[in-house]
Length: 552
Image (tube, helix red, strand yellow):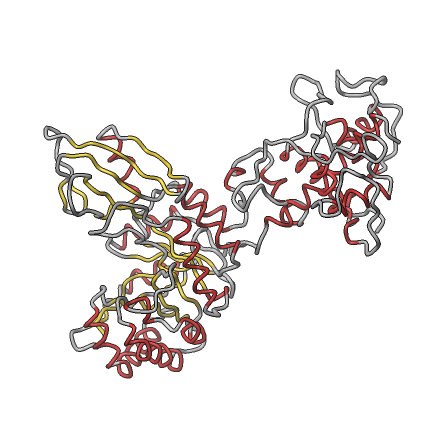
């Protein structure tokens, strides 16, 4: 059959298949958090960690922000431990805060810090036998859920001592307590200095997870640039995995802060909380940009000599032109996608109270498995897209974008529908009927099998036109052929533009009576309009139960 009806039927089947295939490929590992134990915290299964560091603010502010972050976090990591000059433990536990965090269903895994003091950290490592005992005793005595080790800026010569310190902690720590380490980002594979102080594989064997501090790509005193470009973050993940570390022992640390530079000054890179950026830009009538290469936002603004003074973390902004790199909703969404891409255990953030509060709207939904693609957030078909993606029937345009409003091709439609009905699983020789679908075409198997089983036809003998776009009528026809619903002759078409003389009248009527397809608000079906990726997701989702009953 090479008539128009067959051509359209083919297109519609292909769209369904593509939808399923798109979902299957895009859902790299499933998101880390799927259920919530309380209104505040995610259900922390053995594979799920979403933490935030509590530093530099008050207990009341921490609790306020945790309430705003409802559902996005399951672990709080406050600064409860510091070091005395002799390397012994300085205990600064806030017991009331511990109680409040536990009330919210959060694990309390505080961190110990040397505040980047190399000498103090080295003294502590020499005192590691005593220090490890003090820390474990404090964790147990104060009903804490574990310990995060944030001893930074050691040297590569301290690697063995640091590894042994972690070994001691693991041996002494009760098995039901978490032990983790905050480790430096290392996108370039440095082996000397601070970056060389980690034996990642051994450390991962002693700990529950390693939290990569994937930020400070640009720093205080350095040149202007992103706090954490996407490539910097991704390469840091890839490096630690190359060391043999299990992906489920890696947590990605995200920055909730930015840095600013006066373009005329030799030094810069002073820190600023993300939450303060919008007010700063507004005050000085600045402009916000998004650097597509680094997937990072930055702002430009000018402080004039007669402007009222502004202080950020105690530093007054002097007159001049400023560049401010920071993180926003979009840049953090790109980074969150890396969790699924590399099947890592979860996320951390530095630090709570510095974030722009609106980030939690997406973060919480993402942690609950409701978002996969950046461009599908709050889209009318987002749930349909998610369903097909989770089924493995569709994938995105790339790992970040689904491109819901672009049109489907015939090859894509066939791919989705054959995935949905399991046709691609058949272990049989693939025909070679269509001359314009070469053997190395990505949808060759789907197209040829769909034709073999009379689901689709070409536009002409031996011609398939895989890159042509699919219309709504064509997709309806091919879906109707697969679903094989009976025709109820007692009902009439609900669409003003689809009457009995239309070539796909019966197919459209069959699907409409089952609620699989719907028209537009003006009562028309618009059968000749091309089908978008979002529309095919919706149609395939509605028919999913029946598609899965297709004879195997």
